[in-house]
Image (cartoon, helix red, strand yellow):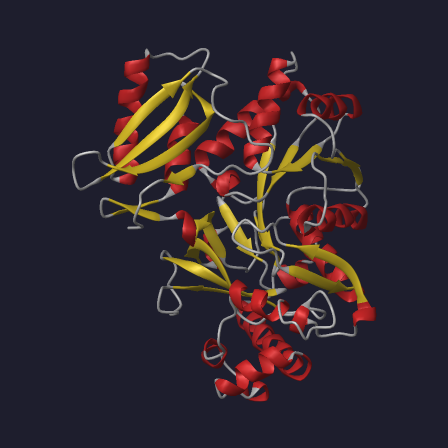
Length: 444
């Protein structure tokens, strides 16, 4: 059995774990009803009496929470705090301020109390311990933390474990590679996109990433670390183990990979109630895809019930992994946000399927983008993959195009146009990458 941060919780028998989840959800619903008028009114309208919640069926009767609802509650003119009508504690009890990135609308402000921050660091310690971080590690974080929560929480979780933290914000990629090398960092935290970019920069500077002291790469923010092609390319380039994690400002660190044989994310089910549902809100069975609804079970300053995470996953049971945890698992991690999936000529296009094909190819670089547009003459859509020819490509350009078209057709069921560019032409993102560009006039 693998080492765990909290083996009592992570190996709890399913029946006991589910009783715990229902009990904690009920307590959270009572707390929210008593402290947040917005949720009290919502539960009253739905005819929900929090004290009467006894089953998962009762939980599913509780209305979900959307980000738009939360934004409206924060924008009320009568609010006496920056958190609008969502604050459940006295403003003097707020210890941490963070906010969402604003990539899908107005940023949402998030308040956390001292108790919440202990909860955050414990959730992240669970993640990092599962990823092999120990007191003798030196962990490099190549970003400025700013108002975004993830790296702050990860920083304090490292301290809680006893590991050394090296903040690498406000440096160039070249300087980060040099500092990681000089300090002999054993791990770094990043997005998959930037992990690939740092590897490319290292090679350009004459540093072999595989020869550095880096043993582990902890990824978040994008699906790549659970995409087989991307994970394999990262591990080969850095000669390091790549781990995946998923979370959100509104919910917390709800998912993490382990050292078992599975390629996916365990739901952190002792701290969260994670539901995977279809478009009608019905729970999906193992082996089926659905979207996430997440309830943080211990949050106090700004708590939520049944938050629509809008991440798409493929659900598997706890037996899908051999690590000893009884938590269910998202096979292949997060497959993408609901908004990332688009229909092209009647076929649902999965961005991670394209990523896997590109990253498995030694004939192209790591960078790519997908452009979807309308056909000039026909009533159909055109999907175009832009990527770059690798310096040591084994095939000629036409051969590379044929190979990519064939594999994309098999994986996605779509015929792609392939546009090859010279290495370095496509933009190198410094954090996350926006790889799908839908230029159709009318959404399909």
